[in-house]
Amino acid sequence: MVLVAGSHHASYAHTICEEMAASAKARGTGIAKRTPEYVEKKILEGKAVIALTGDGEWAGFCYIESWGHGEYVANSGLIVAPQFRKSGLAKQIKKRIFELSKTLYPESKIFGLTTGLAVMKINSDLGYEPVTYAELTQDDAFWAGCTSCVNYEILMSKGRMNCLCTAMLYDPKDHFPPEVTARQFKKKAKIYERLLRIKKLLIKKTKVLVSLTW
Image 1: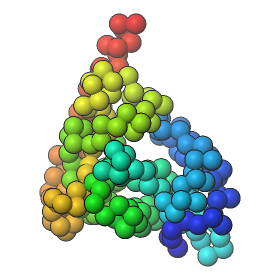
Image 2: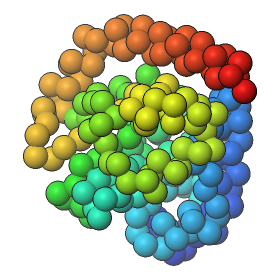
Image 3: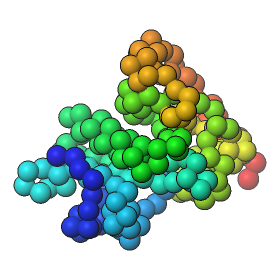
């Protein structure tokens, strides 16, 4: 079951953070580091969803962050326990945190950065659209979360206007219905996949050039 996390779920904070770190290491990517105290804070604020089995075993998690005085909202820290991956649980969690975000921040733009085609597909199903980095929050506090990413130097060298991640945005005042966006994504899935491969190659080349200048 996927539900809004409450105070009685705070004990899962350490397990969640450990799995976030292990998952990032396995993928060879960097993520904004979360502490158990920060995750617990989100749970106590009612700004997180958690997935549990009928026996109370932790299965997944995601939380909400707001930026620019509430103008922008991000659904962050999506993680699914290894034994429950590829079961559709990530999609359920994303849908629930998306609904919670719209309830708590009905006027806010909801955005995300991802390198995964699967997450892009889930976002498209919810009504997100690919956008440029310029359309995201420019709040320094948000971008500071990228400092632990292996591609941070690339991000900064491009003035925070491009990186390996694809930016996606849901604007409640200006967006296509989810079914339309999903159809568009399906038609362009191969194009997005090709662009991701090209981005990876360009980032790899840029990393080599950056290393040679040091």
